[in-house]
Amino acid sequence: MLMAIDPGTTKSGWCTYRDGNVVASGVDDNDAVLQLVMSWPGELAIEMIASYGMAVGREVFETCVWIGRFQQAFHCPAGVRLVYRRDVKLHLCGSPQAKDPNIRQALLDLFPRTGGGKTPQIGTKSQPGPLYGVSSHAWAALAVAVTATAKAA
Image (tube, rainbow, N blue to C red; front, side, top):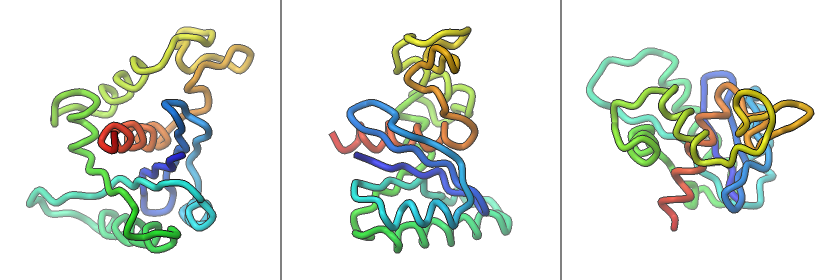
């Protein structure tokens, strides 16, 4: 089983993924995600920041610190898979110019339409789909999980 993280400055999205299915997901304070990582027995993938020569702000450096903390807290720091956003875009959308809505749609297209409502892949409370509960930054974490799993195969 794989845990994937979309790191942030104070909160991070996460997703646990097994055999092509979302097991759990959420967005939590970084300290809570750090506790999850410390006790996680499976594999770990984290979205990594890449430099493209542009000036960056404080938030990028704070996110880098959290990436390092998550990696160090894992039981096998050398085994953490760092997944770059560009690789996610290329894997899911075939283009480095893809935006978040494109990635979300590509993820929706990967899952069966088994739930209720207007987006059956997500579904409703009474008729949940396979992506029920995935929200906010957990979508980016799911994209990291799908990409990391495909690259490992």
